[in-house]
Length: 224
Image (cartoon, rainbow, N blue to C red; front, side, top):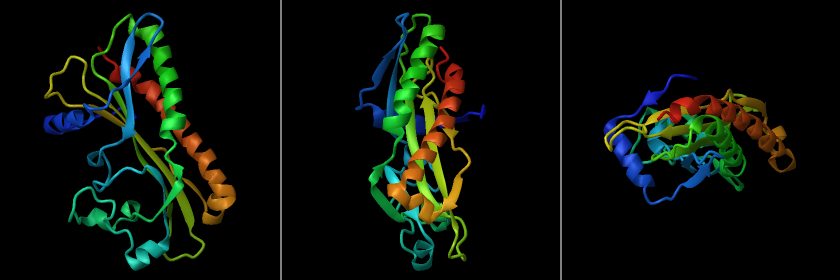
């Protein structure tokens, strides 16, 4: 949890330039401290298999493996067929478009409050120049066992926190942390019941775990 992965300088420059047109929300503390924060889909480069992040719930059944449906359809680059393209976690599957990724609606407000509390106690009136990024990644229901008709399905959620060092240059590497709690297992019928009510409840629990990790990482992410 405390081990940060550092991106290459080149990747950092590309990612920062990609977010340059989006204006961050400014979170302010009572002592005039402030930091900009951006909530958006994590870059494909962050994800296993170099795939796009999930804007809505993605449901992958054994049918997608049996027929080859969805193979590499999440790939970020045309013709990017790798061993990861044959990983069920990268299959496009069925997109449940009525269920959008809840990071913006549930995680973001709570993270903003955590930021305010941290700024009140640790900000010391400092206005951060580099924005903090929260990028949602995986939100999926994926079968566990291919050869069982009653296979359990795993609900997975993943989010990234990353920021350019406050005293860095344009070529400085980003500091990046991923939060990916242990998946929750249940039968598909249970997940689908009552308009995916169990998915919504369990996803909030997973996000709560990531909120705890987010708070723990703020001293590193917001190091002056």
